[in-house]
Length: 144
Ligand SMILES: Nc1nc2c([nH]c(=O)n2[C@@H]2O[C@H](COP(=O)(O)OP(=O)(O)OP(=O)(O)O)[C@@H](O)[C@H]2O)c(=O)[nH]1
Image (cartoon, rainbow, N blue to C red; front, side, top):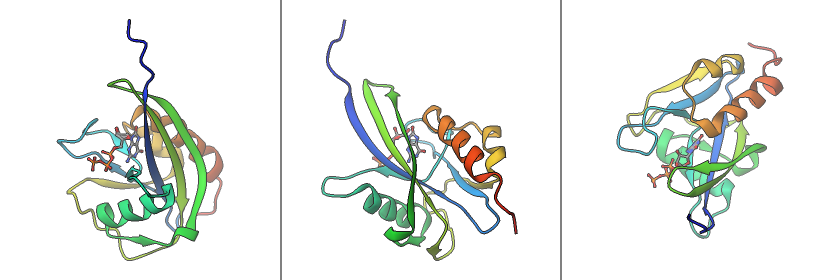
């Protein structure tokens, strides 16, 4: 029996929401853990970073967009086990305003998805409750 406590992995992620109320998800590229699963853009929070700073950096690196930290709205979080004895703690922010155009930098497939259709995608397990929360809280919004 392994009694060692799970190692905490702090990851920060962001749901970009466009003016039509659609949410951006990305497919994890080959070579990464859980490749092929759909996720919210983001990544590990590095030493000395806040979750907000990590999201800004990851959105810049992965998608070439520049949100301002003040535009990141804390939305929900995931707290769950991952393979390898790690515990994932992942705040999810919502962002509706950013500079630049989404341009996947890591050859990752992306999709803009109505919140009620997120469950049609093979989301990572930790993201499924977050997608349900987005559906419940964003789906009623007016679509332009
Ligand atoms: N970015 C992101 N990671 C998620 C989500 N859901 C989820 O379980 N994860 C997990 O959180 C961890 C994040 O790692 P990552 O590989 O994206 O982080 P990173 O970009 O800093 O990775 P790197 O070390 O390869 O540069 C992975 O184990 C990933 O499977 C999500 O919605 N977004």
